[in-house]
Length: 335
Image (cartoon, rainbow, N blue to C red; front, side, top):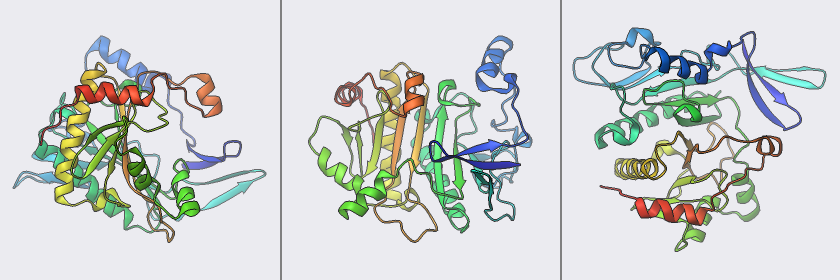
């Protein structure tokens, strides 16, 4: 039984796999070492291995192909090791002394980006990336239709040091029964100034040397106070609460921006592990003012150290102005 437990010291929630314990050999670093010695294990995400995964939730397929069989282009499935479960539960809080917990209500999904093994997101053709974006949109809207869900996080882990447990290119979606507080500065700014913080950032950064690239619909920038070296944000110019609401023209623009930036960043930084996070407004809540969706792209060049973990204050050895200049000089985006 999975549950969320309140960390009272840090005033946040931690997801605990109650009654379970991964053995040391189950963790990605150990598995990666074993695979490198013995050769690659069978990949469950490759076309032809559909029986090794959970049943698909949705897919873009070639005409005539059947669910859970070959012929798919992009495929969405429940995470086989999901820590959240929807079932027919409601969110239930329990207290024991000073501690509090709740059941692990939610949904955890995997979106397999391509049937081909060994090809990464930035190497996919434009049409394939467009299909991926549209699948992420579809799954977002389906999950948002369940009123028990309050926040939907789309993310991608690429590489061992970004937390990826599978080499095959894929993204993931987590639907939470509560709103994480990591972006609490966004609603706070709106409450104090009655303006969207992200719109204000776009205005403030105009003409500054932290701008990496600007397309018709999006801006790429190195944020003013990045936690990680060479961290970048992709922000839609138009105020939009939800990533799922972008239209076909914006999707086409986004795929070119995403593909070009990733390829340039990876070439410039010697192919590091990286994380991508798509941050949108909460769902199924009345108060959603001030939210403006955006994408974070974080190369994992160093591992967090003790002082960062203890204090929550990240140490970044590369200033954002220099990072933006280095990436900007290598950037190649084709439409």
